[in-house]
Length: 328
Image 1 (cartoon, helix red, strand yellow):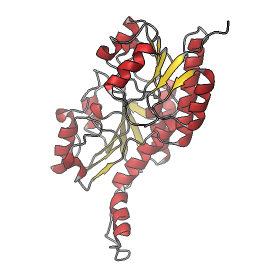
Image 2: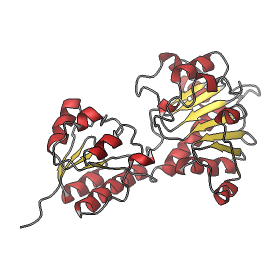
Image 3: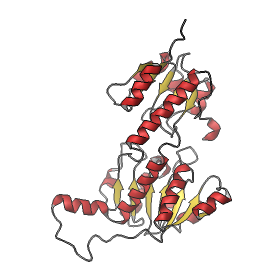
């Protein structure tokens, strides 16, 4: 008899080509609405599927995993970050977790630089003038920003994305500094002309721009807390394209409002869509709707990784992008 196909549940709409290929390979169930699945819908999914394909909008916590059926053996996350999945509990229950690392590195690094330029060069203010029709013509002292060439960039988290940001920033003439859980190898550090800071406090106090590129883990929650934000120079800006929970958003808002921090470019927020309303009102802040990885190419490559992880698992092998609790 032919081997039965794995039952796969996908929680959000994916690119058409990805959904088509998944349907060819597996017994596929899609979320046609493209709205986040309710908890009841997630419970129903994990009770009778072999593979769950969630995204960052799904909270795959211990209570949900406790209701999973015997069939669920793989959570093939559509995305690199897995802070929305209780990986340790999943492993305890014999459920593997995979992700899609690497494919959005360049896209996210591009967006980091875009936000950096948007904040320092007053791009949103200029755009608003043009759209409103209020532009009175060129003036030598209007819309003055600051250049990023020659400025010190402090990268918080020097993984794939942090290093990609460093390569771009060097091309703009920035001086590269970084703080990381582990120091880079000497050859990698030399290639980026990067200065390592063991002390995050000492680094942030000296930087012109801070770029947050580390994942959200219990160890990085509010890594940029109120005390550390107070250490920044009043002329410094913060760019975050990683995870909102790394920055104390209320403390950041207070610092921006008080003029203690010059500006911020944020693509992610501490409480998801519930953004501090005072943050929205600030003219020195650029807010984006978590679009750092949003390219057609990146989304397709993420889907390809999901397919490879599930197909490898279905063939009886370890998924190539397996996530272990020790990695977090």
